[in-house]
Length: 523
Image (cartoon, rainbow, N blue to C red; front, side, top):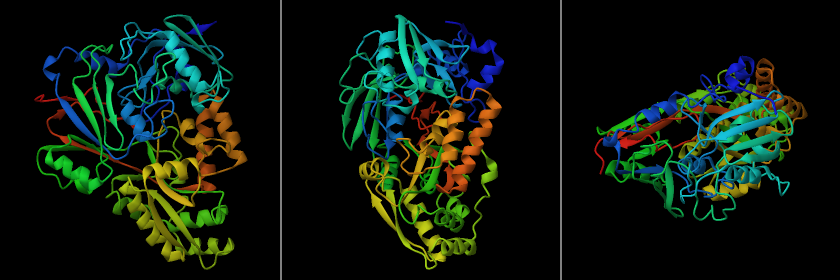
């Protein structure tokens, strides 16, 4: 097999290193040992004064599965990031750091990826990780034995070979520009069957206990390959669906870190707390079920777009902390983001009424917005939209459902009219937009457009970076012009924590990384 060092091929490096705000995939080539963020982690590993203590982190939703192969919810993956790792691992810049793999090579034809596993990686049960564990984990995701991939990111995998304990060779069926991001998928011990009961990974923390609807507890992995990391002895992720209850728990000292706290709540806090706010790689939208009436009519969908005042929602619900968007991509992915779509649907009630009349609904219609109650932000957004749509004679009612019901009925069952949700970003724009492909399993919007299918099919395998950017921007345009939904904003994320908490890092994906967190005065 002919391989090359990624860093010696600048034309391919530009293709592989996908940007979030700077570089999305600042991954390593065969001579790369670690990027700056990992060096920073290792640089503090001898600071024993940081070690010890425990923290409680509030999370708003229960976990759907402990098994990383089954987990669908972004809220689950952000927590399990501390337990599981892949060959590579996302960093704070949206790039990729070496994790279980210390380096990788890619063949000239872009079909073969060869990963070299670092020394000293152990699972939480003490077992040394080998290439066989990687092959087992990724073969399951690729469905190599069943013919049914568990992950669309691995559907293109043709075969996986392990020439020795430190080498994994993955061969693809066809070129796929975004495949390298699949290497972040979790690795579990070969033939391990109890991941959904007692998850075992290689991450900085290991599983202790899970109480459904209450909490997930993890403890320090003393055998973690980055010496001295993590600092904390224990972390409890406490499930607090009620925003007010979570806020009171923060005030009383019961919890230490409150991710995604509402802006108005953060502003109520007295001294002793710190809040950070950042753009996140997230898309909030009013999603239409494009298969049901009246949302199977493009003019109805466009009318709703003209009727919704995004600026009013951003000011009223996000208190100004949100960035308006025009399609299903965040401006965080600056190179791929199509900013021309932001003004595609300026608020225009008269135009909305005209489109409704042309669609056969001169007197409007009634419909339901199904919203997961665990996210007050989306519920509040729904209420604003209900008021806005009254101006064009459309009556909407809000159905607030539990998270499990939303997953089962809306996301999996596609049994709904409209919903408001935040779709989490990925490390590659194709992975975000691919949900709009007609045959995609996660296309819960039931959106179908043959032109989009073709454009995204090209973007998936395109090696030329400029052509790929053109395809991604065209895909956003099709989705927006066909009005698959009302794309509202990338809400800024707030995280509030006690001022004794240090080292907290934010990511452009859903991640709660506790490996770098430490206490001024461990308890």
